Image (cartoon, rainbow, N blue to C red; front, side, top):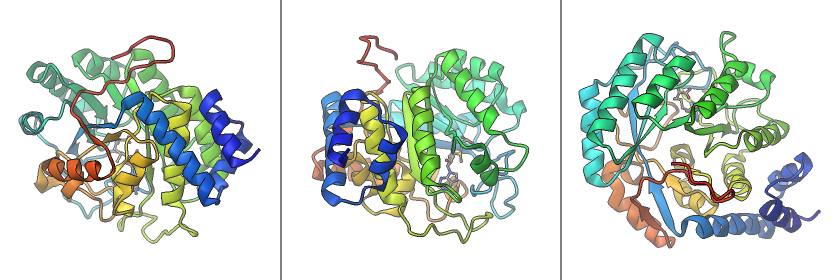
Length: 358
Ligand code: SAM
C-alpha cells in the first residue's frame, strides 16, 4: 500500500496493521509525510476548529522515590535542590493562573512517598473549592488504587501517566529492577476504571528504543483508548545514566510529529499536547506539533524560582511562550499559523458514540 493509501485507511478505519504503522514511520517521501500531517491537521480542525486548549502546569515537587535512568529528578541525582510546594503556594499559582485565563491546572511532580497522599487529596479539595469551574489534572506517578480513588473524590478528573514503553525488556533497560511495567499498566487500568480522563504516552527516541517498540506502543495505546496522549522526544539530562546519549540518526522530531498525526487520525477526539520537550528540541516545535494535529499546550505555571530545580532534561523550555507569563507570546505565535488560544476547560468529549464525558 502506498503511504497516501495508508493515510486514507487510517483516516477512515482508525487503524492499520503493524506493518502499515511501520511504513508510515519509516516513510521519507516529503509529499507523503506532508499529506499525513495535513490530513491529521484537518481532522483536528474538524473536531476542535483552530482553538488550542491551554493547561497551567504546576510542578509541585521534584522529590521522587524512583530512579528512572533517564530522568533528571530521579532520586539518585544529588545535584538538585529538592522542594515540595505547600498547599498555599499551589493555590497561589492557581489564582495567578485563573487570572491569566487558565481553566485547567496540571499538578505534576516526582513520585512522592505514600505519606503524601493525604496532602495531595487535600490540595485537590482546596482547588475544587476555590476554583469550581476548573479541571484538575494530576501527573504524580504510580499510587495505590485507594489514593487514586481519594483524589478523584476530592475533585481531580484527569490523570497523566505515560507507560513509556510497552516492551518489558525495553522498560527494564530504562528503569531500575524494583520498577515494573506491569504495575504501570495496572495503574492505567485502575485510572480508567475509576473514571479519570486518562493520558498515557512515550518518549520518542529513548535509549534502546526500536521501531518495533514504537509500533507496539501504537497498538497498546490504541487498545487502551486514552483520552489524552503525550508524545515527547527523549532529551538527555547531564546527571543521569544517559547523559551522553545521542540517538543516531536523530529522528526524534520527525517521529514525534508523525506519531502526533497517527494518533490524531486514530483518535480524532483525543487531547494531544504539543509538549514542552518538543518545544525544547525545535524552536518552532510547538507550531510544528499543532500543524501535525496537536490541540493542547501546557505553559509552565510553576513559581519561577523552582523551575530550574524541576529539570527533567537539559535546557528544558520554561520561559516565553512555554510559560504562563508568556500567554501573549503564545497567542501571537498561534495567530501566525492561523490558530488561537481556546480558554475553555477543554474536557475530553467523545463524538463517536454520541456520548459526552466531562
Ligand atoms: N512522576 C510522574 C510519572 O512518573 O509519571 C510524573 C513526572 S515524570 C518526570 C513526567 C514525564 O517526564 C515522564 O513520564 C517522562 O516521559 C518524561 N521525562 C522524564 N525524563 C525525560 C527526559 N530525559 N526526556 C524527555 N522526557 C522525560
